[in-house]
Length: 295
Image 1 (cartoon, rainbow, N blue to C red):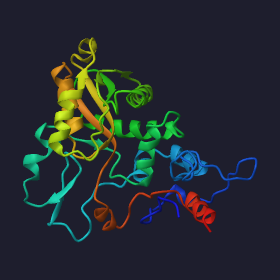
Image 2: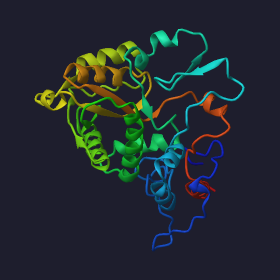
Image 3: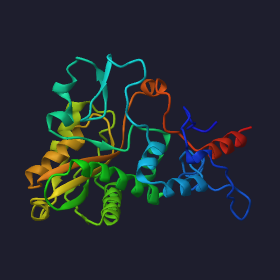
Image 4: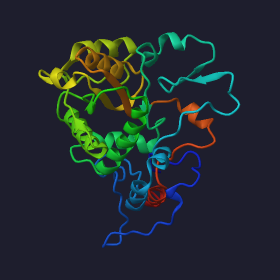
C-alpha cells in the first residue's frame, strides 16, 4: 500500500479526470515524488494531475492541496476556529490569551490544514533537486496573495524563514525569490540561521528560545527592510512561535508590516476525520499504481 491515500472525497477535483499520459517506455510518470523506495519519498502525484493542478486558479488550487480550516459539523458551539492562527480550540477556553499570532497582532495566511499532498510538497522543497518546484511556487504565490489582503502601507517584498543553516535554508530563499517574481515584487534575504537543530517536536517555550538563539537579521538588510511590507514565507506552522519570533525580528529591524504565509498548518488527524471533505493525500492514479505494485 502507498503511504498516502485519499481520506475523503473532494468535490470537482481535477483528480477525477481520466488519466492518460505514459512515458515512452509505457511506464506511468510521477512528477512530484516517486514511489517508496525510489529516492526515499512516497508517490503522491502523477504528471497528468500535476498539470491539472497547475492550470487551476488560486481559489480552486489551494483546496486541492490543503483542507480549508473549519469547525467540523455538529461541533459548532463546542469548538471555535481561531482566525489568527487557524487552529481549533474549545469555546470559552484560554486560547485567545495564549495564541502566538493573536498576541502579536498577526493573522496567519496558509494554504489550509495539512494533507498528504502538502506534506509531500514540504518534503520536496527540502530536496537538493525538487521534483515539482513549479507547484510549490504556485501554492506559495496563492497564499501570498491571500496574505496581501491584510496588507498595510509600504512597498512589498518577499522574505523567508530559513529551514536550516545550510542548503535547505537557501532553497526556501530561492522559492521566495521565485514567488516575488510571480507577484511582480522583490525578494529580500533578511534572516539567517546559525544552527540547524530541528524545531519539530519542540514545545512552544523551546521554539521561542531557538528563535532567540539561532535567528538573526542579515547585516545590511535593515536598510532594505525600512518601511516595507514583508511577506514572510515558511513551510508549515505548528505552534507558530518560530514564525512569530522571526516576525518580531523583522519589525525591530524596521519592517512596517509583516504578513506570515505558510504552505500549510498542522492539525489533528481526528479533526480531519470529522470533516465531510478534505484535501486528498494522493492522486488516485498513483494510489492505484502503488497498490498494483504490491500485489
